[in-house]
Length: 274
Image (cartoon, rainbow, N blue to C red; front, top):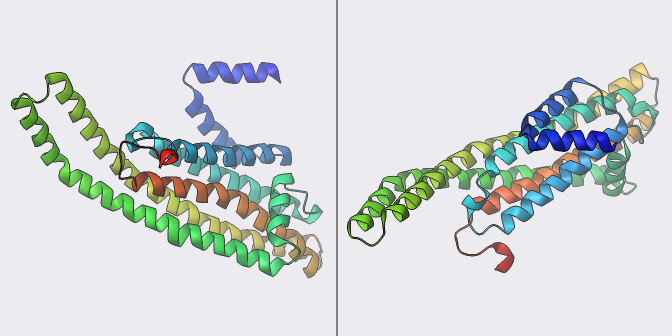
């Protein structure tokens, strides 16, 4: 185990962290994963979303976390890969019991359901609606407007920098730094406008995965494994809600982080000090 971790650290130091992560995501989509690996990846996904949210909250300016659009893209791809892997496990092994897809999915499903499958399903649908209709759609609209106004204001900001330089209020180095900041700000909000589409698409994918898991699970459980309707509903609804929840929680956290970073007005104070 230690040799494996040392090898991973070596590849990370060589700059192969992101390509290695993409290869792992593709492998998760193609190859079946054992339940304990699903537990590890789901836990990592939730922890990653919380770390990103904290980084957004404690950054003084949006440009202090300029890599955020790329982080959103990679986190969205990770969730989609986990959705594919967990759906495969649920549909293949769901007839064996609620433990077939790992402890994380089972625990989330049991907590939300609380003994009543109708209530659990309604609560999960409410979470999806909150994420998709309120947070994701609002953040996407703010990103679109911010990108448009930032690009429209770009020529005026460049002219103001040139005027300050000609008036002797700033020197050449300060002018170069200000021009760089203005260009980075325009690039950042333009990237956030595109990244918000990934978040919205991920929320839609979560709804589709929910329907596929329930319908496909019932068909497979009843017709292929000879389960009764009540047993099939018990297993597949719990696994579907648990699977959807462990994907929607980090999605909601990252959507909130995206909404926070595009609605920041003050550039001199982080939200932890507000």
